[in-house]
Length: 192
Image 1: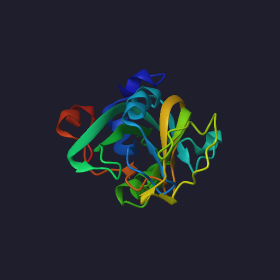
Image 2: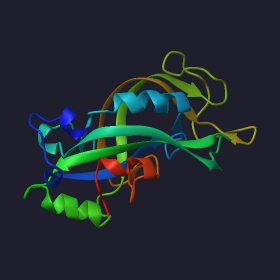
Image 3: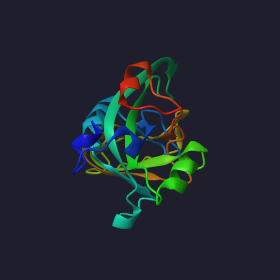
């Protein structure tokens, strides 16, 4: 899977692989959430996308690339909106090199962990009135209570995925490098 993105075939000893949660359908710190349908579309859009730092699109910030994605669910967990919790997972790789040695150590040590995604969507839907505020603004304010329910926006119909970034504080608290793969992903490389 990795070699689909390389100019020459890389051996397993030349790459460092790590798993990520990119985003989910839980209401986040910015009072936004992705719809489940959006997560499935983003699964395809994030394949091959580069990892950078702090959403700064300079070429020198490129550090890793996604080679596998999946949408998973935790049937035992529900979101603030009452949906079953769904999340977009990914596997990324980087070349093992002297330049990346410290970053790999920081990832393994849990220092570089949190991530955030950069993408575009067609719809930003108000949870109170249902309007697509990208096309027709409404009078509701995210985070404010309306009849006891906080207003939030649902991000729907993604059109592009630009990048994912290592950040200090992600909008989505669960987004970041994870410790382990799920059982069916063990064939993609090892990470202890």
